[in-house]
Image (cartoon, rainbow, N blue to C red):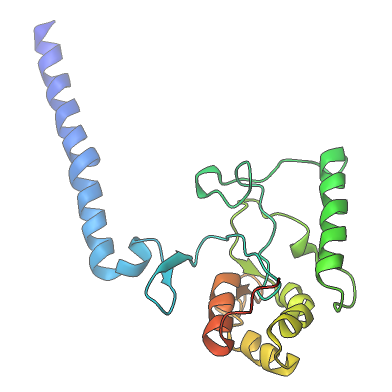
Amino acid sequence: MRSAWIPALRATLVTLVLTGLLYPLAVTAVAQALFPRSANGSMVEDDRGSVVGSELLAQHFGGAGYFESRPSAAGDHGYDALSSGGSNWGVTSAKLKDRLAADTIRLRAANPLATGPIPDALLTASGSGLDPHLPPEAIDWQVPRIAAARGVERSRIDTLVESLREQPTWGVLGEARINVLALNLALDRQFGRPAAIP
């Protein structure tokens, strides 16, 4: 019996050291050397050098002068990176219908100058609940509100939005998209922070 335990224990310890210690350290070292920004979470700083978020994770933006992100079902209040996931409400769910109705009323009230139907991306959460991008039509729908809140011509906002449009990866994977955090930071850099509404 002892002759079987000793090799098993030795194999367990060697495997533990190799896969639980050396391999993770090696991968971490390579990632830090080759892709330090990505390895550290793709953090984004504002003009003051303060970290304001990650370009990989959506967050809530308040105020008429900022573009809204896609709704989030991640966590109790949304946008919780520790609770990534969707709501799992189906098309027959009364809770989903109630939330959509409430969000439709809220979005219409907050965007009185917007024309056309509300883009789906502003009403539906992504599967992760943390998608940091919006399609161009969801951004364009909000532009009149942003221009009015910041006292800027719409064409200047449109130009800024277009400068941050990301094309499909390799021209075929995914769709055109805009990172909402990057866009809101660019708004503040170019036009200053919006005045607080009394």
